[in-house]
Length: 90
Image (cartoon, rainbow, N blue to C red; front, side, top):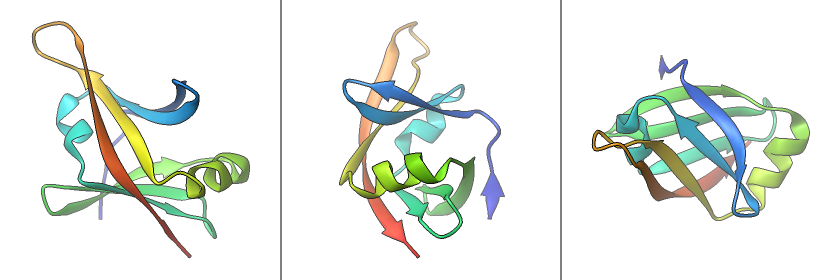
């Protein structure tokens, strides 16, 4: 599994979102939260990428969401916001 160092977990419109320095990662089809290890990963263009670990509280909160906002800087200067499916694993 590949990993990315540029993901941060932030509040966005009342939910937790993931902000990336590289907008390519905001195109993830699915984000996975492992409630046993609190690891977050994503599927981007068929490649499984590790995004990092979060606190147990954030992992539990994410497990209750069905989708997640993915954000990144668009090359034209504005923020790109896409919605991905969020799946819980154990």
